[in-house]
Length: 292
Image 1: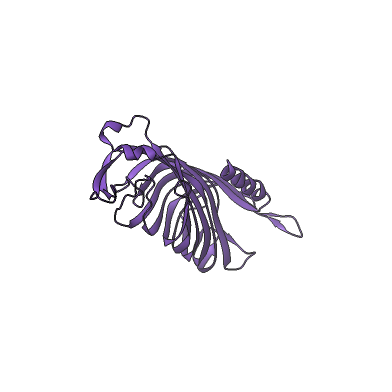
Image 2: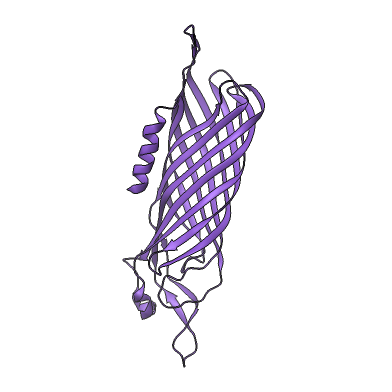
């Protein structure tokens, strides 16, 4: 709920802006690595709600800004029972193998990205190529718990110590971004953008009560079509009113990679190789927007 309230505040403030777009998206969310039981990737349906400005010039200059504020939430993702590496079985006994129970994971959070840039080429508001610097914050968290239908007869009793666990990730991002749009006619245009950024921050797990520093790579690629239903200029004497009403249909791929994350949420002192923790989303979205 705290994420929804933050996004609602952003939405409320955005209505005072002279340009904004609201998008709804659906697709898949995939996570892999870094947590016990996640040696293989798992995925589930994801829904996103976003407030977006794809490209807005500062007055009539070639400098521009863009932003994307998103809230996302996945359905439960099931990791089936799997054999982990060894864990300590006492001072006099050698390590023994361990079978992990089935685990449910879910992910939700917010992603905030702002780009400030300059157009290298600009013919008009629907025909340009620009580059800029992206600054952003990602605040996802992962819930994990033993699945209700788990067959505990094939997992070690030690795994009964596993409780519901929440892992919170907070990262700050910076990196180059490129944006492009080309119009086919007065009403229809194609757009695309790409961002490749370095991010670092912290990862905190409430069950094992630990907080570690993390770093990695953030990527986002977006393409789609924009249909501008209303577009005209009205000279009011001391200023010109230029209302625009449009709809978008697009596809967005987003990837978060955190380097060498190793979290043991079993309470069993499990040892397994460190590996990258990856989250990926593939979203098809529809949006409506306006500008003046």
